[in-house]
Image 1 (cartoon, helix red, strand yellow):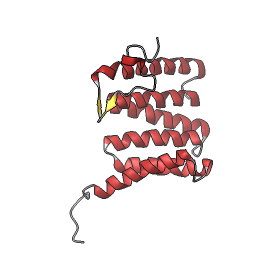
Image 2: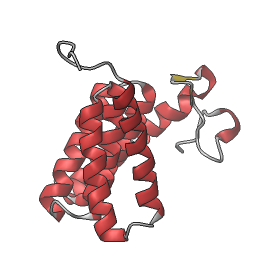
Image 3: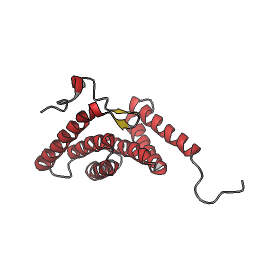
Image 4: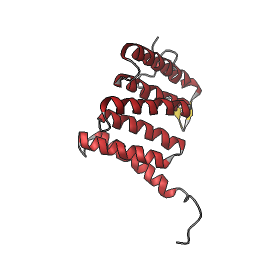
Length: 166
């Protein structure tokens, strides 16, 4: 079975299932099929490599991403947080794979409305990526764009706590 089975048109350039924050009914099978494949890949990876292997973290990030697209934000959070923990333990806190996991988690936290948490993850991803790849790398630019959106949203968010007299 292929990830693209059941997807209208085969989704040759990826599954455009998520539009305007909702899953298009005709494209739902793409995401569900992807989720099934990622779950199977995760099970195989854990059995063959052990639950704490960096390749398992990649599979958890992939599964977390599709769960997020399906709207299972808490399920996605479990997968992405576990992927980050695996990467940190296996590779160290400053490895580029840790930056990738932080970036995924930041994106989810932004969607959950945890802008401060998203900011922290994006800032960490940015610091690691700049050190590893240099300040002008395309991945660094992508993280900067996501961090910029969070900072903009934080600027537009109502202040927390009692209003100040400033």
